[in-house]
Image 1 (cartoon, rainbow, N blue to C red):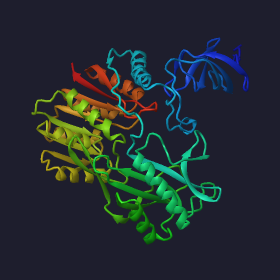
Image 2: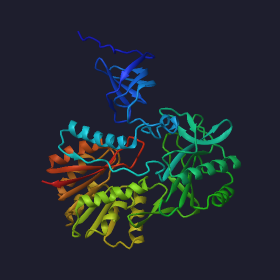
Image 3: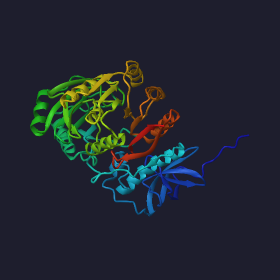
Image 4: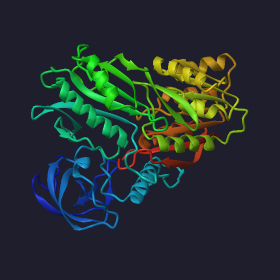
Amino acid sequence: MKVKMQAPITKNEKKELTIQDLSYDGLGVAKVEGYPIFVDNALPGETVEALITKVGKSFGFAKTTRIITASADRVEVKDRQYTQTGIAPLQHLAYGAQLRFKQQQIENLYAKAKLDIAVKPTLGMTDPTHYRNKASVPVRLINGKATIGFFRKHSHDLVPMTDFFIQDRKIDAALATLQDIVRRLQIEPYNEFKHSGVLRNIMVRRGYYTNELMVVFVTRSEKIASKKTLVEMITEEIPDVVSVIQNINPTKGNAILGKTDKLLYGNAQLRDEVLGLKFDISAQSFYQVNPQQTQVLYQTAIDAADLTGDETVIDAYSGIGTIGLSMAEHVKSVQGVEMVETAVKDANHNAKLNNTTNAKFVTGKAEVVMPKWQEEGLSADIVVVDPPRKGLTPEFINAVGKVGPSKVIYISCNPATLARDLQLFQELGYSAKSTQPVDMFPMTTHIESVTALTKD
């Protein structure tokens, strides 16, 4: 007969806990009789008094009510709201310790996956705040007024704010002005419970090196009152705006953007620069959100490739061409492949914009397109990948194995899927000596890295 295990804690109990570790999502880890408890606002080495908030079969959750012994790495937080909303879950941890934490997270995953790969110290920022070049904020009715802010973690409760701490200060200033304009024009905010109202979200992008601003109003329906006046007020009160777009999202889901964009003013794209190259970015195109660290990330990838100038490079998941075009001047040719048609259009446009003649981009699935290229006689010396958080598919990895490049440069935004994928590459005869983390997302638990694999 199977004996049912009982947790050694109960909900709403207050307990003194010693924090042993930090979880991948930034929660303190304590154990009571071997039972793990994940504790909000707690750091390794600390002793805290905590309120148990949830008890499960295998682990529980708690929140710190009093710090009895503080860690030397604890710093004063700017505002608890940044933790409560998930904007800056690591703001209570000294920045140097944040960098070590990210290095350690990759090391732990490699050890678990039995991968003998060194992890270098994380490359950080001089100022790890106000770095994001893109903001997407919800608009809701609070106390009778259209209000921007951020949702409290695991809820739909809007926390009003106009200073977002990790966003570009000029974006924060633009959002405050836009909130004021929306109020003056009495544009009705979206009500997600009734699926009524007009304005769901405001997105602002800024070209860090060009100062250009793009404003996107995400609406439930095509109809939005006072469009002409809205544009006039925006361009008069925020002079750096070069683009105003209405995005229409009629769905009831949590997706921020809909499929339809309508240009209300100016250009359909925003311009910025990466490593001296110009890029035009559409409203829905992926573009790295930390412009300063993007330069570091891409230069790290170029250096890791150890280029001679004679290579043919395949840029899979090529997006608007930022990585491929950054490499193009160092190699013989770049062939990019991307599933999003608008991104491919942007990539080829950006190649022309920079007078790059040795890079071309096509639409399709990389695992389908790469073998076709091989059949047509195109051999690749290097494959560069920068996949989403879910990582690479086994089909893609097998396709890379068939193409047989001498090197694979893996830019990862999720160390868990990176470790999984490196195991599959290892089975195909590819190995890596080291991984270089780059802190693209300070104050958060997200980890970006560059790993160079070579054919054994």
